[in-house]
View 1: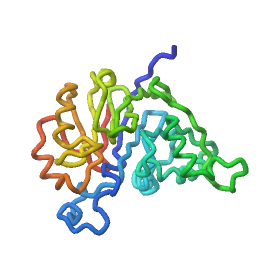
View 2: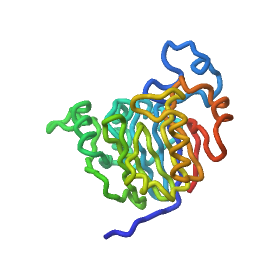
View 3: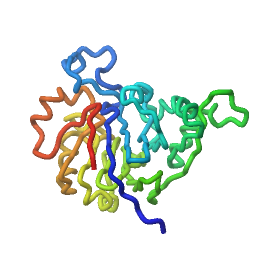
View 4: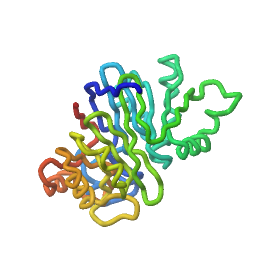
Amino acid sequence: MEKAKYPDIKVTFLGTGTSSGVPMVACPCEVCASPHDRDKRLRSSILVQSATTTLVVDTTPDFRTQMLRENVRQLDAVLFTHPHKDHIAGLDDVKAFNYFQSKPMAVYANLLTQKALKREFYYIFEENKYPGVPDIRLHTIDLDPFVVGDITVTPILVYHLEMPVLGFRFGKFTYITDANRIPDEEKQKIRGSEALVLNALRKKPHISHFNLEEAVQTVRELEIPHGYFTHISHQLGLHDRINAELPPGIELAWDGLTLAF
């Protein structure tokens, strides 16, 4: 068995918004009208970097903007959590990395997500490809740990209503989005993390996402020192106001936030 690798990593929140983003199109609410940077949220994704490896979790509809904002020049792999459009829609833009890196993009996804990728981006998988379409190499993942470059990735099974979704642990850091239930056996994979990211859509209960109270309870139950919330909707409220209500050690993430482990 290959020994797990836990290099020092940097994690950047590329986006922290829900599927509609914040501000939401045509919405006049105080959050969507806020001029403050931390109330502006692209769709949820993270960039994970070690000294030699760079990967992205999910390619949102804002993927191009996120790559340009963070000045990403190297990308070794894309990891997908699940097949919803706000998490896969930006895949076409990996073609820029194909061109400048002169190699296919490694894409890690379970079979459910691969089915959606082949449907939504059928032209990538055709035998006779049109020139210039993205060049990717699919890697099937389940719940077994795998290695990308020098980074060991541990998948964590969570549920988004009835849909299985993959969270990922990278050493001391665990990232989970689009979930409202974590099986007890999967919680054991999270324990011992230094930081846990969870979706916290809004204050009111939701059919397929943790609300703010449930996300706080999960961080406390798992005894994680630092909790960060993502996949936030305009319904949650203004960033600074909600942050002031949260207990010590827990805060809302924001676009561009960088953590080191």
